[in-house]
Length: 115
Image (cartoon, rainbow, N blue to C red; front, top):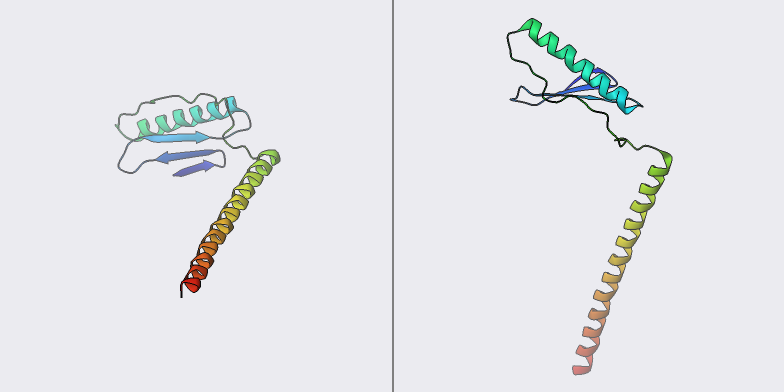
């Protein structure tokens, strides 16, 4: 992984000649343009330094949905959902322990009456 600046990351898979360029910007179109510009710069750099074949497989297109929803509203919703799952888990654990204890008490009381 190579970082050009805080908005561009270039990934290179091991044992592969494929690179992936990811860009982030507040505007999806600006991010796509930035990724395409850096890809063309990488293409020129590779072609000027070696005879390796270099082709762009797919140009970046603007993403229609945000990939980093960090709004306070989304954080609050995910926090409440996580808390609810935790509370339900604890309740299920307590109910399971109480059911197991009631079976144990019933087993002990039936053993005492048989003796």
